[in-house]
Length: 259
Length: 300
Image (cartoon, rainbow over all chains, first blue to last red; front, side, top):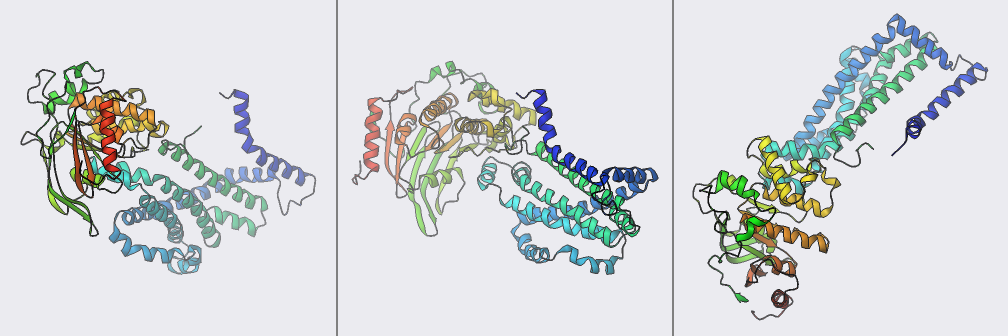
């Protein structure tokens, strides 16, 4: 049994390094070791955040970016999941589509940006397309792999014990594929933010990436750093949510059980 | 005490089994399954005829080959309802294939397997055939009670399945583990959960494909006693495939030695139950079978 002080220490330990870095950073800028034209002090960044929050600019851009990220994720992830299931369950479907998917997969999706701008301009469709494309592959590949790696002995058991195909899928195949699907999900979330930020930086008229690019034009270094920190926070948030989901869905697996 | 039995043997006389209801775990099928669906007269006396619930198995001129290699070649066999038959033989003699053919997990190349539940018009789900595999094959993502309820797939409502699963878990002595994940159980406990899953539907035929091979010696003896006790209480037909001749003579009332896809030896074990380990009659029988397996080429 861990006592209360040691539990607090356990919870504080991961944050020790980030806090030390921020404090050192603030000290370095305050002492004049670093010019705040290149690197604003943390307090300046906080001030910039409060200012952007007050004008509403921050919330609008954050909302726009989040909506784009989620829409692209739902579309690309949905298609990837569906195709992964289809190809995992049906030989015919796999032979029909897998080779094509593998060929397209080897094209870096961000290299399509010039083409996408030609097709869609800099509107919402361009961002949605790129995010969906980026998210598609990790979800597809890991769903397919997960279904492939379900223990055939369990499938045979299910059949012998009289499960219908639907029941077999729901009770044996899908839960067996779930750990692998979660790996794909976490990859996909990382790619989702990356793609969106790049797309917004290159061609957008709103969103976090746009906010950072605008700030660069006017040499507002504190807003640029603010945007970068928000990316970090969003990434961490997505990861934490996935972890939580894993922990509740994969509670049966000793590797995922919370201590 | 032992004599060779004919291939097309008549069903054996019942064991002295009238004290089955005195067994702590023996009462449940009588109360739950039998009176509900299987027993034509729900209020029949507890010492009803042995094998009343078992399925009789008739195998005629069975052949099975894989890629042209004959594994079973012209095998004939009759298993009376409610009997406990063990099949022994060397690795690759076809004993596991025979079991899979009888269960319908493989299709025969030629010949046929007929199962007779005794009552015409009985739905298959009312007297299913069940198998216990070498490994427990539990769903790691389902709790113990839900794993047992897998044995009732397509039968009854969810609360009914759960209710019966709990009764079956109690029968194998794991009622307190109902809510546990399989990963937290020991190897012997997992195999007991698998046994409960096989028994929960009240099967007419239970095939055991070396189910105790991976267990340590003491756990194995405990499991042998448990399976024998439940068999005596429930009256299904049991077919055990095993490498372990000692296990076969301890549990079965008939032993088949399979060699090159045929039955080479068919022995009856008349040693009364409950059997004592180290019984000289069992030891003599075990010696005789081992002698046969280890290469005395002449027929026994």
